Image (cartoon, rainbow, N blue to C red; front, side):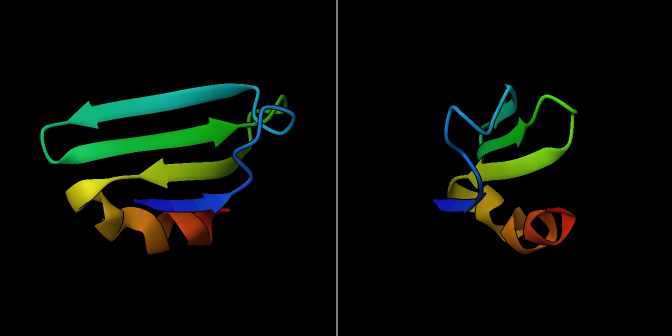
Length: 55
């Protein structure tokens, strides 16, 4: 599991969660619809560095 950015309830207004057989990609967005954090699991942890750059 990899976690990046802000994932607390005060910072995240909504989550976009993609559940796949190889893992989960959850992106957290603030009230202005900017991605502020993410959580990736299992094989999806390969995406952590590109998601971190998007923050």
